[in-house]
Image 1 (tube, rainbow, N blue to C red):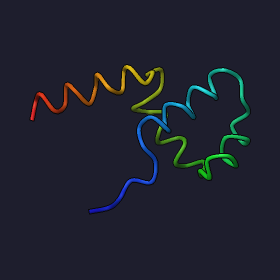
Image 2: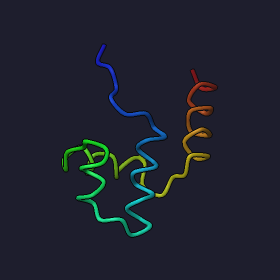
Image 3: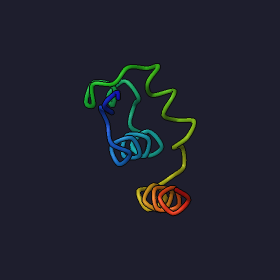
Length: 64
């Protein structure tokens, strides 16, 4: 199974930095992220905070 390089909290943190006005290129350098990866993150995680991610994980575990 493929190992994830970034946790959901790191993803949300990076997206939150973009929403707060930090240039995307700076986040790419800081995290070591590529532009296509960032674009794929935006789809499922945009607008979610860390509390939203925890709630999402909890709902998934309850459904399983």
